[in-house]
Length: 374
Image (cartoon, rainbow, N blue to C red; front, side, top):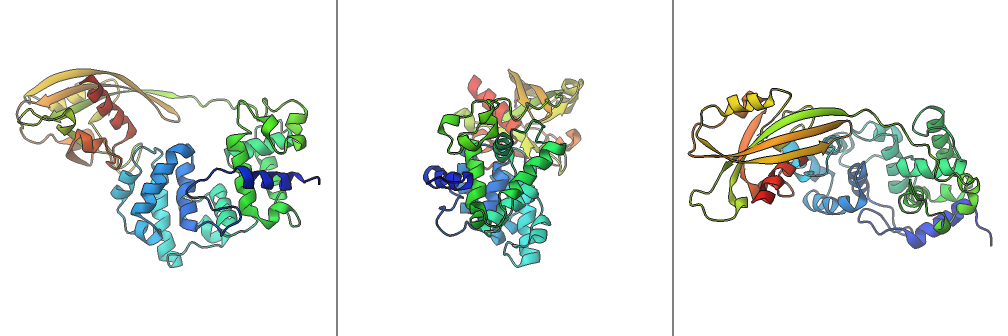
């Protein structure tokens, strides 16, 4: 029996989908809304393998909307430590509060109400509507964009203008009444994403394993490696910075280096790494002089100069040098507010490098560098 493209892809999805903790069985009950929203925000710009453990820890600590809504922002950021793009965590926290305040703790199924929740853009709304509520709603992420672009042999850039409109239009056509996808939209959207994530990959599409290669225009024309066209990279801004790792070693001189205390400053509520903790760090050409003045005439021992750390963000390339110093004898507390921080604390190195410390990834790398030197 000849299957339509949709039927073939749905059969393939049932047989080959990855077992993921937030994903419902294709023939079982629909997935719970809270788990889907948490996973979707975590998965934005993050690999599935990385998200698995974070997702499990998150649901263990906050099993539902009401639990998350009662958390503090600092607790949420601490739980997100290492996932990056911390705005997602703030959106998730704000969405939990909105669900509880506006909808009695129950995720709404109405499209407009979903769109009004913090952090839920067109893709996430489409995912929730189809996967959680079984509504025939389209979604387009990077994987779906690639699959549909190849099916259409789309020459335009699918991330903007006419190309973006063509991809979204195709995603909506796939869910028209009477088609197999319309009957099970959640499975269909996940099948599209799964195909893009596992076989229809960017550089080396596994067309020989693809269940619908015979109905793909790009494959028919031998253009699967040229579609979608490679996007021009956004210019990256270089940033020079200087940090100081201030330690208080154990007074008895015993124990592991991870038992030493390290001074951390907390960034303000806006800007990069907002609300996170880090060793005192200053950007710009005069960073070294600024930190030197900040340390003043305190009795400190210079322990090491760390190799420069290159830390990449989406549009910035940080090059950070760092000195490691130890207080010879504790004096008045160093005032991190003078460096623009909103708070300070001392933590053991072991705690600072823990999974829920709230330390920025750059801060983690600096402390890891020091321990690697020991």
